[in-house]
Amino acid sequence: QVHLAESGGGSVQAGGSLRLSCAVSGTTIRIGAVGWYRQSDGKERELVAAIPAGGGGERNYADFVKGRFTISGDYARETVTLQMNNLQPEDTGVYYCNAKRRGRDYWGRGTEVTVWGRGTEVTVSS
Image (cartoon, rainbow, N blue to C red; front, side):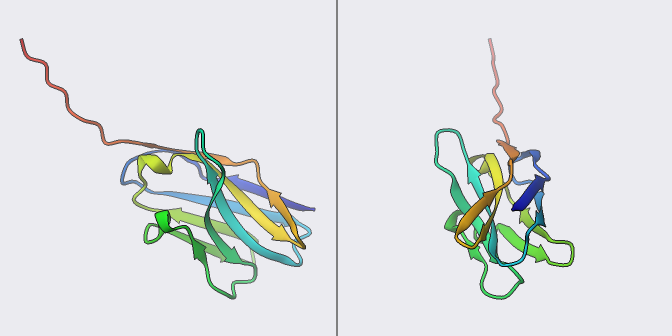
């Protein structure tokens, strides 16, 4: 069994940053890749970024996060981190850590990310 525990979600204004962490434990040998997925209201779960276990190979990013998000792994601490910069309201959702091992997917419980718009000024005059 592989156990995944996410942390680091929260609320931030558009343009802000958050850092998500996934602690990997249990039977970690032969994990092929660890990644982050997200699910927004009314949408299917989608890949955000993934990294091969052990650090070798290319990182895989969804087009909508390229240049803004960075995935990295600390293999000594068995932690995979997702640094998210320039967050936008459309990035709002539940972010899940995923590990692929021997043809099976393992999931964490998810961590919620909410991105608020910058707002717009309304002036009422009589």
